[in-house]
Image 1: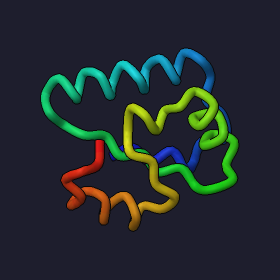
Image 2 (image 1 turned 180 degrees about the horizontal axis):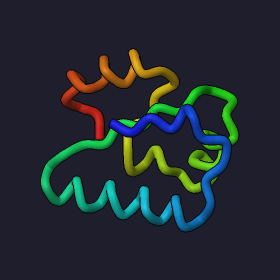
Image 3 (image 1 turned 135 degrees about the vertical axis):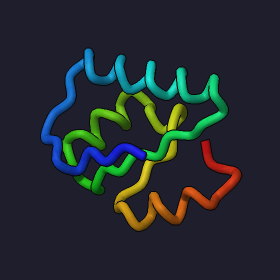
Length: 74
């Protein structure tokens, strides 16, 4: 689980790192859940690069924790 609620900005380098992390973990059959609050600039950036196609996105930590039990998520 990756909680980015404390971030105000991510650049292209950080986005590449995130996609790389997800790819490496998927090779190990592990899933990534990202917490980014609705309306945040980081969420908007992740939406623009369609990051939700790579990892499960959640508005709150509680939602992400609940998503850990969802076998159908990324």
